[in-house]
Image (cartoon, rainbow, N blue to C red):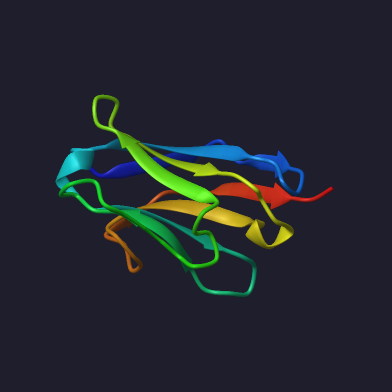
Length: 117
């Protein structure tokens, strides 16, 4: 069955970087649009970024444009989110999703990202 497992979250200082990974199984990554979203307590899922199945075209929310980069490794069936110039406002649980934007067909368990000095 479809399974998504995120990793790479943790604590970073403002201005720092983290790289999130998402291991996909049960389907081929290149056969699906994929995305990242995040959630803070008490709020709904906020779309962060997506990558189109065809051509690997990438799209970003305005709040992360220029700082985050989504990518995929087709051979490893992995999705990534490189997060640079992190801000305290980026603190959230980050989810990998099957689909470009919420609502996703499938969602991982999430990985916590905390940006604090």
